[in-house]
Amino acid sequence: MLQAVRNAFVLPDLRRKLLLTFLILVTYRLAAHVPVPGIDPEALRRVFESNQLLGFLDLLSGGAMSSFSVMAMGVYPYITSSIIMQLLTPIIPQLEELAKEGEAGRNKINQYTHLLTIPLAFLQGFAQATLLQRQGVISNFGLTPATLLPTLATLSALTTGTVFAIWLGELISEQGIGNGISLIIFGGIVARVPQNMGGLLVGRDYLRLLVFLLVTVITVAVIVIVQEGQRRIPVQYGKRVLAMRGRRLRVAGGQSTHIPLRVNSAGMIPLIFAQSILIFPGVVASYFRFTQNEWVKRIASGIYDVFNTTSNVYWILYFLMVIGFTYFYTDVIFRQQNLAENLRRQGGFIPGIRPGKRTADYLNDVVQRITLVGAIFLGVVAILPWLVKSVISDPQGGMGSMLITSTGLLIVVGVVLDTMKQLEAQLLMRHYEGFIK
Image (cartoon, rainbow, N blue to C red):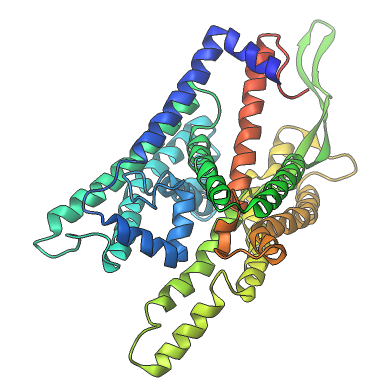
């Protein structure tokens, strides 16, 4: 591996790509420390200690939310926009037709995704700023005439930060190495590791640090195995007569290949879906816990106690919802691919299976079976902080008990594998041995 890294830096064009990627990531991390004006740092720290929703948003922004910088939302409005477009494509006929038009159609959908990101970023920024304003973190924010201009300035800064992060990510994809948007998220998550590790070292909590390191290593190994796991469906293409040359027929086709169906094709999206839904009732209930009405107060306190990361019910629901969302998202994505119809058009077939509906039913059955393994895997990874906490008592509790959270580990491992494969392809084009053999 070290030799492969040396080979990558020996080649001028590849070295330029790697250095550009690193420079862009450093630029993003520097921008993540530029705070939005009018923030009370001490009040912000107290709010983050008591609000699990903000802790989740801080994870997604790579720590930029805890300082409420201009990068507080990161690229997640774009991720949300992408997920919305994916879910709407099979529902809206016009989008479905665009998806079938090849590269031109995908570019058009990508343009719609970028346009949708702007209002989503504006709305998400308004929601986050309003939440902090009610906690006394932000001053001069609201829709009154006196605060309208400061409010627009704050929202413009947050939205511009998101657009800037997306531009940096796409710059990496075009001129660097790896998927730029994923690397932006990766950089934010990894930047938290030294802080988490330093907290354990300062507290001389060596046992917990050792356990977390061991759990992280084992989890990474399992994630690699499952993420790379796939079921290969054999496909045979029939021979076709293309032209007649004199008395000879020009024949093409007849080759064999396979369709790789991944065990976990949903990635970490089910974890984000499930966690977002589970956090919402507790956050809403937290605003009614101290009301004067005793009946409302009891109901709010009960809901808050159930939908809290210290509750065992929360983690059981989290596990079940991750499994459900894994099946749902995998089914949506798989139906969009329409593999059976594409095989029929290209003259391909699965040996022993009739083309058309029988092939579609067979592929759906295989996907449902292998998705069970992926869903259980995602569910276990999701509740990993709870399992670790049950072994070693953690005064902080929740998702912050690990060096990298379960969602963060999935992102980090996936990005590293994808980047290694792209670098491997670049090296193989130049006849060098890469990372993967």
